[in-house]
Length: 206
Image (cartoon, rainbow, N blue to C red; front, top):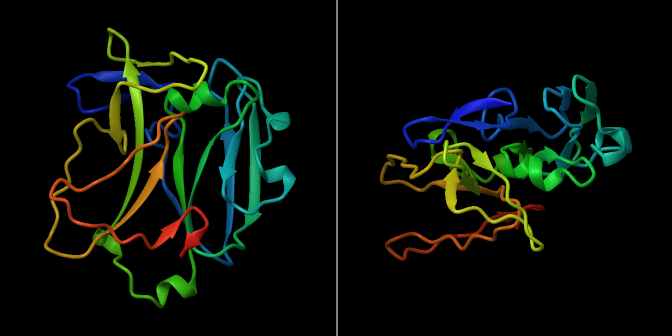
C-alpha cells in the first residue's frame, strides 16, 4: 500500500510495486536473465505473474504459489524469447482483478539483435505508455467496484497520470502501448487524425 500523485492535486492511496504506479518498467536483452524477490506488503495474499514471458512453472506466478501478507517469493529465469513488450501483474485466485484495479501492474520490455538491427526510434523517442482506467472515491483514493463484466473506471490514466502531457520533437516516435486495465478496451487515436504504423503486438514485432 502506498500513496501516488495522479496529477489531480492531491495524493491517492493505491497498491503499488516499489512505490510506483505503474510499477517500474524492466528491460532485458534476449540471452540475459531476470531475478526478483516479491515481498507482500498487502493485507491479503498475492503473487506476481510475468505475462507473456516464457518461464517455467516455478517462475510463472501461478495462483497456487500465492504468498500471505508478509511473505516473500523469489524468481529467477533466463530471457529466451524474441523482442516484445510484456507486462507483470498480480495473479492470486479471485483477487487478480481487484489488485490490478487498485494499481498493481508494470511493463517488461525484451530487446534482441533482430530488433536492434532495424534502427527503430530509441532513447527519448521510444516511449512506454501504460494505459488504464480508475475510479476514485470522495477522498481521491483508488476504488474497486466490480460488476459481472469486470471493472471499468471513470478516469483514464497514462503512466499513472491524469491528463498526461509529453513535449515532443518533430520526429518519429515509437510508442509502446500496454493496456493495463481490469476490463476496459481502449480505442486510441491522434487528435489530428494522423495514422499510426503498427509494428508489433504482444507477441513481438510483426
